[in-house]
Length: 281
Length: 281
Image (cartoon, rainbow over all chains, first blue to last red; front, side, top):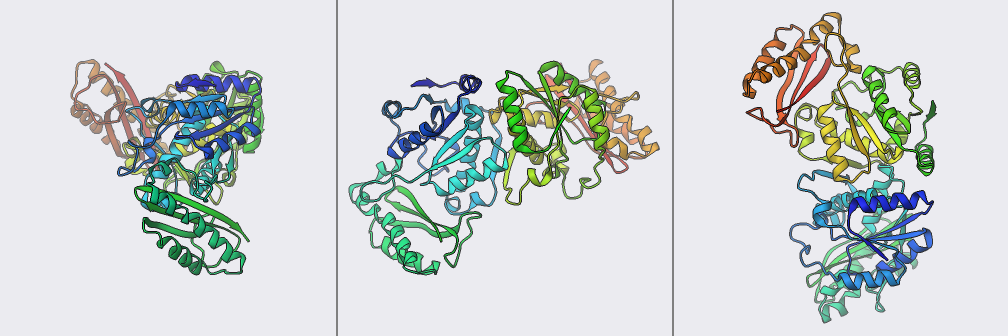
C-alpha cells in the first residue's frame, strides 16, 4: 500500500491511473478503522481496479462543542488494517494543505442539511459536503463507497453528486454491527462498560419498530413512542431524536408507506451514537 | 464543430478525449457571442488540444429583478462565430437538465461574493460558482478561460478552484474593447444611441485614474472623486459603485500600493455595465 500525503501528487497519480484505463474506488474515512470501514474497502475492491482510502479528520464537520481534538486516532494500526484488506493507496493529507488561510468556499445542500442530525450539528453537513467535494476533485474516483450508518450523510451526498454533476457513482455499504447489534463506530471507544452494554438498545428499538411494521402497524407516532420507551429504560441513554421520514426530502411521515427511514440519535455518556433502518413497503 | 446537449454524453466525450491524451480548454459563455468571447476561444485554442465552449444562460446568477428572461440570445449566429474561430465542441445543455426539481446544492465563496457587484446582486456569485462547479464536473477541462472584464468573478472563481481542489488551470483573457474604449459586453445591445456614446466615459475614467497614479497620486479617495465627477457629466449615467480594492480579499484601500483593482459599475439606461483596471505598483 502506497501512502500519499500531497494533494498535487494524488491528482497526478489518479490521472495516471485513468490514462492506464484503471478505475478508482474511493473510501473516505476519518480513521480509527473498524470492520465497518473495512467492509467498504471490500466493496471498493470488488467494484474498481484500484482502491484508495483517505484518512482525514475534517475539522469543518465538527461543531465547536464537539470532539474534534479528542477524536480517536491510531495511524499505524489504521494503515496496517487497510493494507491487509487490500487497499492500494492511502491518502493522508495535512489539515493546513486542505484548508489554507484564504479558504472561503463551502458546498451546501439546502434543507436536507438542517434536518435530523443537522438540528444539533448545524454546520456538520456543510463540512461533510465541502470536504467530500474536495476529495472527489483530488482523487477523481469512479466510485465512492459510504456506509449506511450515516444515512442522512448518504442522502445528502447523493444529492450533491447529482446536483453538481460529479461523475462519481456512490455505492452504499450496509451497517456492520457488533454481536449485540450495536452499530460499529469509531466513537464507540468513548463508551464506559455500562454504557456499552446499554447502547445495544438502539438497534433493539429499531428491530422492534421493524417488527411492529411487519405486524401491520402503520402509525409512525405509535412506533416512535414504543422506541422511546424502550430506549428510556436504559439509565445512561439520553435521546437526541427518533424520527421516521421519507428518504427523498427527509420529511416526517405520519403513516408508514413507501420507502421510509427510521433514524435514532442518542447519547450514552459523552458518546453520541446514531443508527437507522430503511423499510420499503 | 460538434454540438452536445446531454450532460452524460459530454462527460463521456471528455473522458474519451482524456484517454487519448488530449487536453481540454473550456470557454463558458452565456451566448450572444462577441469579440470578447472569441478572444477567449483563441486563448483556449493556443493552450489546449480541444476547445469546448458552453452556452448556458444560467438562471441562478440572475437576481429576481434582473434580465434573465430578456437576456439577448442568437444561437445560430453564436454557433457560426464559435465554429469559425476554431471551437471544436459546443456544449448547449437544457436548463431543466442542469437544475432538476430536486436541486438543492450551492457552491459559495464567502466574503468575496458579498462585495462590489455582490452588494446589489446578492445571489449572483453563488449562481456563478455553482454553475461553474457543475460545468467543470461535466466538461473536465484542463484549462478554463475567463475574461478580465468580470474581475470579481475571476477572483472568486480562482478562490473556488483552489479551495475545492478543482484540477483546472484558470487562464484570464484581457478586456476587449470597442474603438472608443467601451468594454465589449452582450448587454451593450441594450444601450440606446446616446447612452452608447456616453458609456465610453467608464473606460475614460479608468484611464484617468491610471494617469493620476502614474503621475504620483496615491490617495484612493481623490482618484475615485475625479472618476465620479467625470462619469457624472454624462446625463444617462447612474453610478452603482466606484471602488479601489486590493485583489486578494477585495478590501478597500486608502492608499495605492501593491496590486489594486479599480472597478466601476454604472447604469446607462437599463444596461448595467462594469469595467475595471488592475494596477501593480
